[in-house]
Every structure is written in C-alpha cells, then in structure tokens.
Image (cartoon, rainbow, N blue to C red; front, side, top):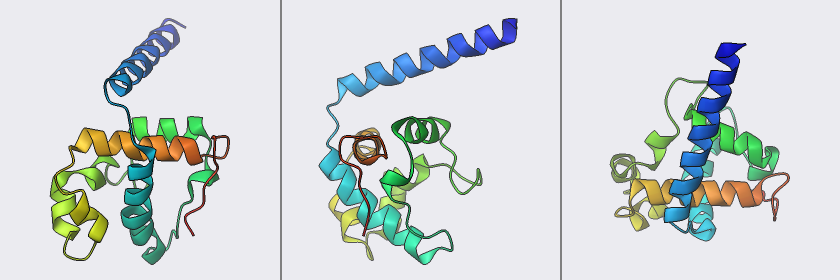
Length: 130
C-alpha cells in the first residue's frame, strides 16, 4: 500500500511538472499536425502497423503514451523521432523534417502533443490522417 501511495504521488508530481513545463511554451497544434502527418504518418503507412490516426486514442491514452516515451512496443523512444538529429537524417526525403530542422526538440514535441490531444477521440476536434 505504501508503494502505491508513493507511486501515485510520484506520478502526480510528474504530471504537474509536465503541465507546468507545457505552460512555459504555448504549443502550436497546427505545426504539430504538419509534422505528425508528414513525418509520423508517412513512416507508419509504409510499416505493417499502418497509419495511426489521433482519433484512435483518448487524450489520456496519448498523454500516457508520450509520458512513457516508448515506441515500437518499447524497442525505442518516441522522442527519438522528434530530435534535430532524426530530422536531419530524413530531411532530404521529407519536406516537413527540412522545414522544422531548426525547431527546438521540446517545442516540436509539445506541438505534436497539442495536435494529438486536440485530435484525440475525446478531443476538441477528433482527427484522422487521411
């Protein structure tokens, strides 16, 4: 029981910290939409998984997924695909990666999160990526 209370308290602190850091930057969901649709969706449509529309998950699901930072069933991290290094590696074949080459990683991550939350199943504007 003590461990549960500790873990619950730790999770709450992480969420509050994430919330406060999100307040420091006013995320641009439109920029997040461009990046997600151009980079994330283009990769997923060629993979066996297929496109993952924001409306396939709830806001809580997306928040938890991004907080865990696990991608490809835990084989790598979500944040890897938002780094300047990753964008530089694909910019020759991806205009969005080239367009956002100099965008700080944290800002782009917040932009994508804002798009996913807005377009979630229970978001303000459930979105598909077709």
